Length: 411
Image 1 (cartoon, rainbow, N blue to C red):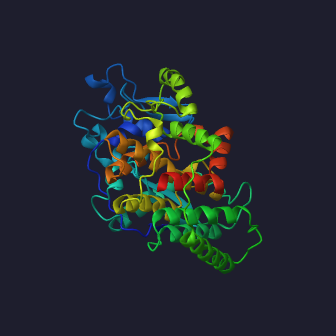
Image 2 (cartoon, one colour):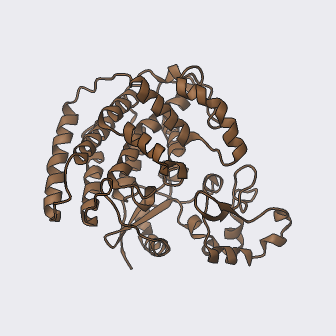
Image 3 (cartoon, rainbow, N blue to C red):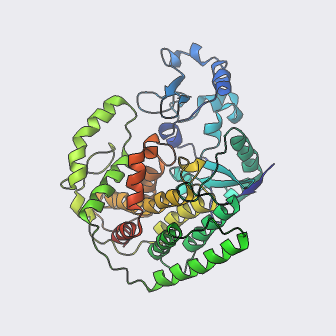
């Protein structure tokens, strides 16, 4: 059994049967899982008359559990419970269901664990301490990674480093985000600056892990000192950056599961590009708010919002849940750019919910709802793998652009 690496943070989770994962999560199934579920006899149930149990998902190039017209899993009952679980027990469910909300990655022979914050119980840290689940997660992690091909992990573009070096780099960023002596905006800004430094360094010849750690420690000290002294001058992002940012917001928020829904989104393109008038209804439950009302300062982030965003970032960094198999096979620095960009994206959506209720202060609920939007497609939606979208994310993740977005929406 591989060793298990849990993020070092005060995180709790227990399932509270809210059913959100069963409404928003596409579950892949293997041939063996399909055969086992078919043999359970669901096709003979009246509730499944004319309803397929599985459908082909082109993006995943495989079969997934079917959904009902409202997007809910075909096995979700009226009480919000899984029919498979209720009748046959948790072990009878597909692996994709059983592992949620945990994400497992095997690096250097160790299983790293991160969490999905689109689960409300994760976002609000409710339930059993995750650290108490070590034995259960150890078994599940070995099952997950055994069923997955483990491609080579890259550091930057095609550059590779020893996997131990990649772990050290991720740990350096997690250490920065964990530094409670700085407000969160400064911590993320320090991470942005360290990422920019690493993009311009040739680390491929650093063979010794101790040398790598020494370099990362010194570099982290420098960017933290710079962030501490930064005046945080707040300037509106440039027009092109703002336009690219809005299209990225739309990409994360869309729930276009079907072709008809994709067509209906075309009418929202103009509003998204112009950033004028009301925010398009990328999702039916988004409030009717004008773009301009989101472009004012909201002041310092409340402590509970800071805690939520910090836990999310530290979970991804400590659990290596931001690159490689966890995020479309991206190299570490490319995935890191997407992770740091998620901060202003989340804060923008949090503002949307706050302004929708007539406030210019953020609450924990605003941030949790916003994070659910950004986390929903994290590592799953195939569109992020397209060269155009990768280039789009990479541009926004460049230091001057990401800095402007972070300061504009983080203060």
